[in-house]
Image (tube, rainbow, N blue to C red; front, side, top):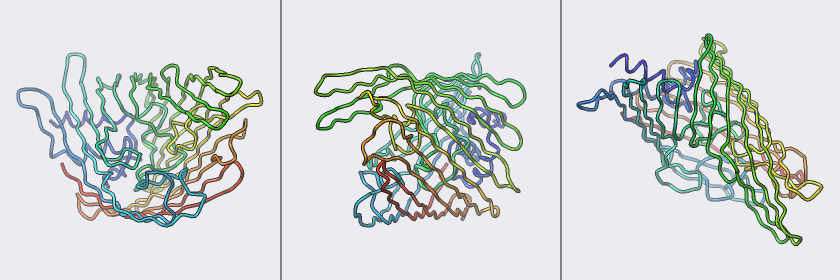
Length: 403
């Protein structure tokens, strides 16, 4: 059983994040640090399916968020802070309670002749459409440390560099995507790994106006790869993405179509600072990759070129966060993020050019199973015509772990 738990930790971590190990003490981490947290919090609950060699873990948490927002966001989603929905007209405040972050987890390990077979399921009540309903965030199988198939974090993102915000969505400019994929991993050297994947590619854009209508669809699966190094002081990662999109514009003169290729690159990491503190960072840029960023500022990043054809414009994001562990049961995460669409081509004056997101929190572990935290957030949005708007939010969260 003990060997199974050790192996479980190695398999669940797409990369063993040194920074995540500290956050995992609080059972409030995200990404691969949350996978480590799941294993650590549930050691006592490991079970074996009778008559088999399959070990499994079941657990999760109930969470209640009390949210007060200075200006009610546009759209149906109000329970997470989406800077791209900042209102540019008069808007009253909003206050609410939410239990949508509550989560259930399953992990299992089965020894086979081809290696250890792992399964993983993660579900909560938080589809980002304003509704409250069960939502599967992860559902995959992994064979050893080399192959993974199912729905999980994209290879293009860095799930070990996600800041631990109490806000569900988190920083605007960080890459974040969970989707269906098939990924292979090749460890080499000391601490190095190369991973490549074929990933689900979704329709990105559809809009119509009085004169023109436009649509963009993916014409093949997305391809992603990353090179990663891990050491005692943390990790760094360089990732790349390739997409192929089909764009069409229909107007009075007929329909014009073209195929465009989107590409992206990202550099990220989580490194040790003073004592048990860590710094988490990411810089990412590309064309046609808007859906991979955490805030839907631009699903693809499209503009109308001088020849009246749709063209891809560059979308760039940067994120920097600092995690401070004040004492064994006290932690603060503070930082900022920005996301910007380039100036190429012509876009409607009312569409967004850039957004920025900043947050600071304080989290306290009251008991081994109860966490209490408070967070302040600010967002700023700027349109193509230069008009800006801002919003602020305060959130208090209580989480109870069960396993």
